[in-house]
Length: 458
Image 1 (tube, rainbow, N blue to C red):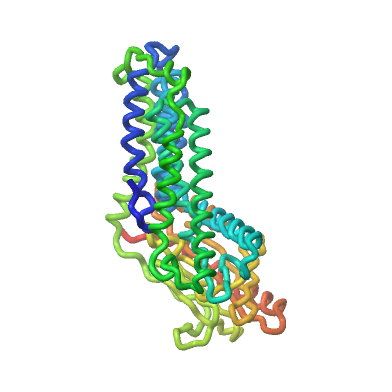
Image 2: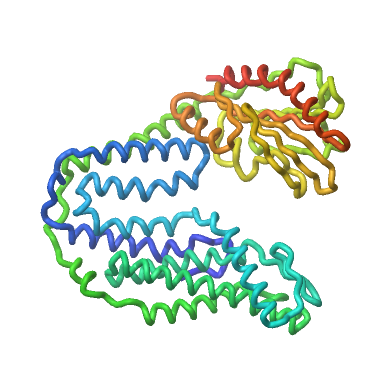
């Protein structure tokens, strides 16, 4: 049912997808014979078209999670547009459960990890076990345990919701019944994860960190605990009620390709066609142009220089990290992408303004950029000013930069870039900010013009 591996977060999809497909077929057979206006072209093609365009912008802008999250909405809108809301209603719940099969649940890792740490801390205090909790690290008398991201319980949480979805679909549960099932299952999953962490910590305390749960493996223990809880859940799961039984009456089946269905499918196809067009022309493009030199003579920063601030933007076609000729403590960094793709993104996990160590940062938004007050791991103070450029557009917001790129890339091949100017400020940060502003005024307009004119050759 599930693989006992933290690296296969979507294994539960193989359990849920067949149940969703079966429920959709059953929903089609149980649709009412008639629905007013079901065979006519309605205005649902407008939201379908907008959703399809949003998908294309998200995918072209390298926001794959957003693109995935839009697909169930597109499918639901197509069903309603093709058959009318009354006829499509039985298919809404199965389609909504598709969200459980998508890799979009990482947003819950940090909240669930924090909740697990808080519950563990509360139980240890109640049991009077000597422990010092700092962040997600639990320090005991004979060692320390880190409540890592993999211990957040998000895998248990999503797997439990998926199992509840399968139970609900098989029992022909109503929307209200399915909500109750999923609430109970999610609660059991969270409690199982908390028990797992607490048992591991207590065992580590009692055995002076020599328990097999520390020295060997604790994933199997967690999944066995989860399987036991889910077995009890399935045993007491809701059986079909009068409301769900009434929904099993068969109707006259689904009409073959009405005009409304054709309109819905045509609107949904616009986004993928635009995306395919942009990918096709991007693949035919020639090599990108080289990054031109900044107007002033600057010394390039190399690996041998002792510079605490080191930006990193993976997959950039050209980067430049130089030392200002006007001020020996002002550094200028620029990276340009002539085409973005997965793994080569202006905004992404592998593209960071500060790529060295664990810095503390505070951002202050200026009219045309962002000023960052940064503290290095060794306590050194820095000021860093940056902005994003996409074609002829400038923004200080990362998400807006990706949306702008996604939209422009559907019709053209815009370059996208970041310019950052930074300086250490051991004694006078106000003076450092003035030096940064002077360098910014000298470099930014010139670089913005270069990005606006840049195109991939071909």
